[in-house]
Image 1: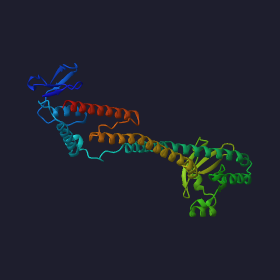
Image 2 (image 1 turned 180 degrees about the vertical axis):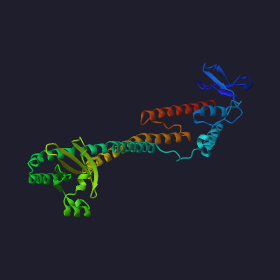
Image 3 (image 1 turned 30 degrees about the horizontal axis):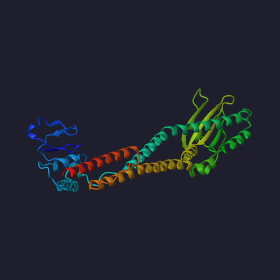
Image 4 (image 1 turned 120 degrees about the horizontal axis):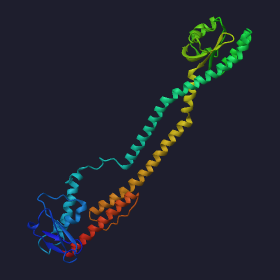
Length: 354
């Protein structure tokens, strides 16, 4: 077994039978370098790029001191053939089966955007209905309180003309479906719908013929001991929130109905406005551009490094690997450059000693 010192290239003939265990150590007589000799195994040794010096040394080693350079060329030829035919398990992966860095970054961006959209949808479904209900309650309460205060005195003196004027005025407010005033005997003394065309034809015809229907009042009758009460129901195809307030001095009640759909649509329009959608789209495309820039800054240096390393593996050992790209890619390039220099130096030593 021929062993060559890595520092001074001195050759030693070692008897494999005298090696006890898997390896042996001894110092070079010329330079003092510690040489580790591994006992060869019977199975074929796979050719690995990181161990090219050892492969070249073991393959070209013979018991003769006058060996020519053809054996080194044979080793390189065998190595290249094994790589092209997929001799090792590592080379069996076909080109194009693995996704690029850009794909992984874009995939991560897509997952992030989907997660944000899912979180936004969850918050929307959980809190927006509650927000809508609160806004509808506040709006109904505000209009009902103002209306009740305006008709309190006219109702006490039975000035029903003034009561009707106030009821008609309040019914014209935005979002109001109807207003109604009921005296202590349960008679509707004032009742107005804001726009009957928004209700179905059957209901509209009934109101025009019979006046304000008692069925609407009966859908939200105030409980005993309470001063006000909310109720939601459908009237003539429209979803309504009705609030009834009792007037203790008169014994009568005031009803105000609000279109639920208008308040819901107003909140949805604010949340899904062109400005909100543009902001979300800008965030997505901005993130996409940033990810593409990052992907290019990583993938381009890796592609160039792969090309140079492939050319070196085919025998162009004079190529210099220049570190480019992010820090990790530069460290990889520096490691390949050290390997290239070591391979070239080892081959030069073999040529000198052959």
